[in-house]
Length: 405
Image 1 (cartoon, rainbow, N blue to C red):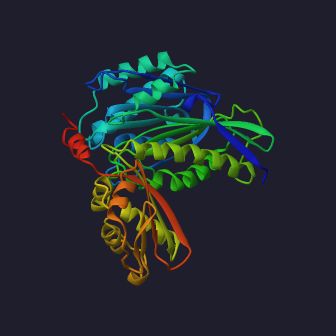
Image 2: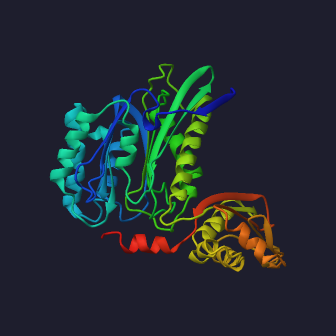
Image 3: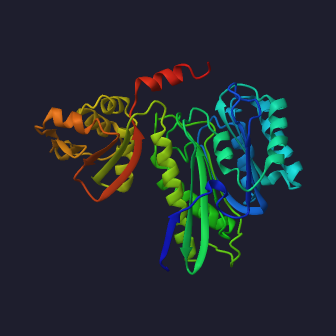
């Protein structure tokens, strides 16, 4: 494998050549903010996607799963403000109509258009504004509207989530761009939230699929805000091939290097989602080591990160390690209670399954920081895992209590 380097660049989703985007207000959101986005490739592009595993998958997920079966995508249309989930046969027809509208404008097969929606569940799509918005977005497509596109997919997000990097590998130069949305209803179960990644690397569809699945597992599947899996989750990777070199298939050493770059972009986007968790005041890294296996470590880490009691303790700057012990115990990980060790923000609070005296004042001060590390050692093996989460605050309750109003 050749050495490679990469650095952050400007441009977000449109940093790689071969893509256009638009983000416009279609009138779906009551606020009048941007709520319709289209990302298009100049030519049909190899692509892959991962979708929610929810048994209540939304209509756009059903339509997009079928579209991705061919491994080639020309465009994705995304709306915010309405999830088009739990909307029956009409919802499915509406999602198909959205794909048809984009395909007609581009002159491509409808099977090459991916549909993605986010917003309120159980409300029929307002197809008048939606179709008019698609037409307006198609007319507005250009090579510089990446930020507008990132804004158009937001719901309770407080900032756009976008990133791009330049990559040098094997004597060739590539770019990777990405954008995502997500703030609440965030819990890994495939790839949590909506995410879109582009590259000018000439990846094959098989390479796209391999890279995306591995990347999602290491990034989007390692975050949680509230333990809830959306009906609409999707991450899509498109490869324009505009770099111009030879095609890159699974047996090419460049797959690993481009995959690392895509994972780097996806990881930053995933952590942005956690930082923007609804009502969040703290970014928490939960690391479990010494587990019997990596799977055990991940299960224990996710159990901790999803515990409301743990998350509220961090919000209150309370080094209540008993809540960590509780969360580890309810996980499926193998545990020896007499070996458990817990470290809050660099302060050991539990060793060999029992309390260790520590300065509560110093601990409270350490836990008042914006970023908190919690390390758990099970002392059973070499298994390790890290997940990212946030605290649970009063504001989370207010935001979700008023979500539809």
